[in-house]
Image 1 (cartoon, rainbow, N blue to C red):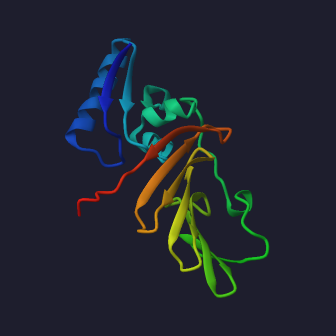
Image 2 (cartoon, rainbow, N blue to C red; image 1 turned 180 degrees about the horizontal axis):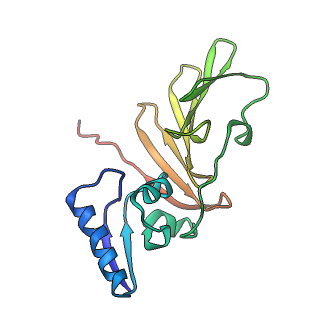
Length: 180
């Protein structure tokens, strides 16, 4: 198996990624076993690969590997009613985001994948002062992929990544620059 290593594949790529895609096609044309390996976390990879005309099985992402996501897992929509929003709170929905309020306090924000109708992309959890403290990240393939936790300074402090069953498989901790 031949592997081409890349940071990412995006809808709009640089010449490096275009070259990797052309190499992939060339090696496949000559029936050589080949894959592109990507490093960066990408919850929209299934959509990106479809737009690029690349089979999901031809690309493997580092996070998908550790999260035990099958290479051919299809896209699946997750909607508000599937993410356990509080029943006692008021939910106001618009095209890009829902606001969840308890009285006059904003408690949660649910964002949607661009170009979809209500397909959950993230869920922000806010404290009593309206500060972001936690964010659940949803993959376009229909599962909660990660949770980000924020410190009192509002900076990202910790990330936890999950497998398809919701079992933690990878933790990343961030230390602030205390030197100033």
